[in-house]
Amino acid sequence: MGLTEWLVSIEGTQTGHHMALGLAIMAAFLHAVFGALQKGRHDPWLTRGAIDVSYMVMAAPFALFVVPWPQAHMWPIFAVVWVIHIVYKLLQAWAYSKGAYTVVYPVVRGTGPLFTVIAAYFLFAEVFTAVQWLGVLVLLLGIFGLAVYNMMFLETARDTLGMALGLAFMTGLFVALYTTYDAYGIRAAQDPFTFLAWFFMIDGVVMPVLAGRRWWRMAERPALGPLMVRGAIGGVVAFFSFGAVMLATRLDKVGEAAVLRETSTVFAALIGWLVLKETVGPRRIALMALIALGAVIVEFGG
Image (cartoon, rainbow, N blue to C red; front, side):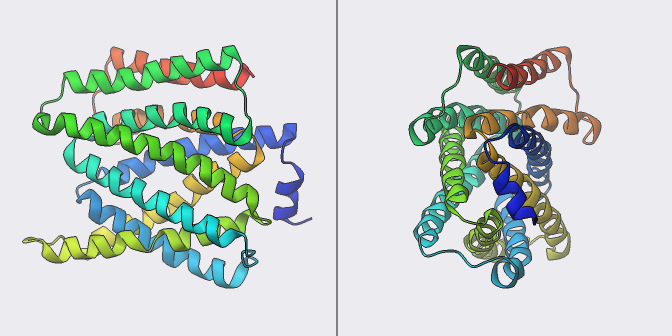
């Protein structure tokens, strides 16, 4: 039995549930790494363009020559997926350019799972128990608490804070939209790896063009070498981060995978502390503990 057949065989089973749990937690960690890469010294539009062109080039050989070609009914689905992700990335880059990362990121990640759980109810008839909704509330208190805490001590970009928060909220709505629709798409595909390969190939088309135009118009253009190295690393991380959560949504509940992925906020703070040497005080530790506790309640409250 091949990997695809095995994955299809465990959908909706206890084994699939445990597999989805592991994939969602892995996606959370890698998403925090992905966010840290975008936070770096380069313009967020340029970084996103470098990442997208990298994973587009990596995915193309698999899409064209390795996995089975998509069935006819998948092309309209890919078209909608492509539009949703383009709007999401434009909003995200715009939000990062208008506000501090530590304020924007928690708002985006907090808005996303709440609306994903609601959308999954209407699209997939998924129902959360009262205990799981308590877990969602606890997790959201932690995530939005981090945003408020960071906002209180914000020293830069205060003049564009209102716009940044609005853009972060809109980005979070599109996180919910793409999470739910991607789950629909990967479930509609006969082979989940066909969906993933074609998704990454077509998703990487637009942002490199926009980034290239932005780079060309800059008075002081950053060197392409370091930018593309960051993009290549980000491309690999994106494969495993987005790929893992998409597979998790095929194997088990979309809402649970979305909530568990938002423990990325905890991993992001840990990376900031351990790698970027940022200060993590007792209040932020308490808020991160709330996020982790909320995820645990959602997982074991079902």
